Image 1: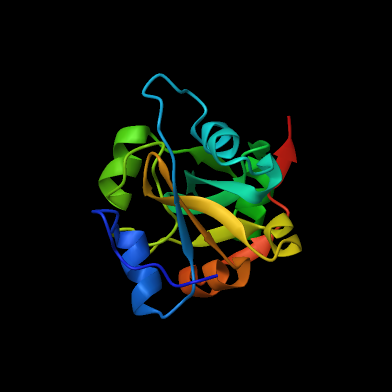
Image 2: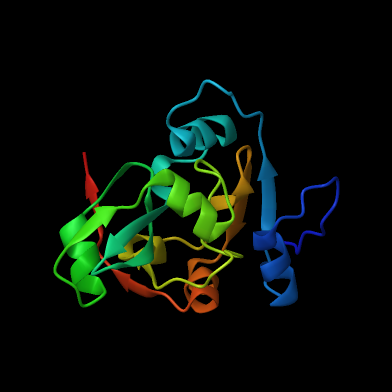
Length: 166
């Protein structure tokens, strides 16, 4: 895996964070369909990558504060398991406008890296089963591929089984 440079206007806060940390990554652009509702599945289909290797970034309220969950697009976030991983009892999905304001990213293009404010992060344990995983580079139509251990390290995340299948 080569270290990508910020070519062609594809630099985002997420790619800048990886470059500054000297982490190897590959950018995978694809044609985003403005009518797509399931952004992660759209990315997986466009890139020909199994759903289990593409991860979505979700933001939830846990005990009054925001936290980030990184789970496979193939399933859903188990809010109870997510709250427990952070030492809380309950979690609820945060409002989109608040998420966009706090992270600096638009829904469908939220990256776990390069957010305006560092939030507590939990990465689903299944990510560690792969040599590399894909997640949003910070805008719709652009995915980052890198080692899951690097994502965990850079976000200071904990790992836990927080994903559930539909």
